Amino acid sequence: MFGGMRFWLDRGRRGFRLDAIPTLFEDRRLRDEPVLGGTNAQGDPNLKNIYTDNLPEVHTVIRRMRAIVDQHPGTARADRRDLPAEHDRARQVVRRGPARRAAAAMDMLVDS
Image (cartoon, rainbow, N blue to C red; front, side, top):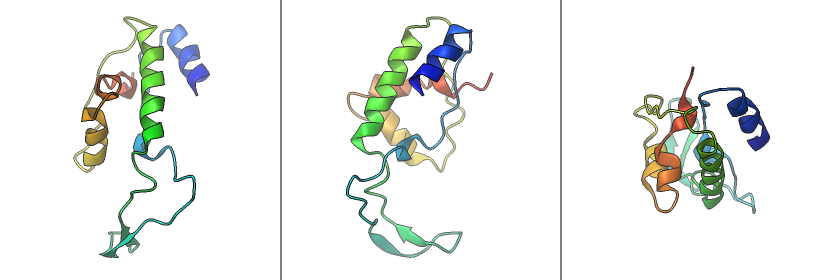
């Protein structure tokens, strides 16, 4: 993935669209998510996604992506319009801890 980023940035690509970043990793022990009760719009049980959402490894990946983009000044630009209202958890990732700068720029969401 990182090699692919470098390949396209070296050729002038301005950024990348990233989807489902908070769910890049799953619990190493493959535990089931706790059930909250009720169902979602698709009829599936509502789950508390503590084993599959926003795990610490996600922040490491975002920091590495940020470092790659930083090596290509002038090619990437910030674009936050791809964070829809239902992605509150993504916004929490953006605002949290040492990865804050890494995620906050959101350069990789550019669709040009």
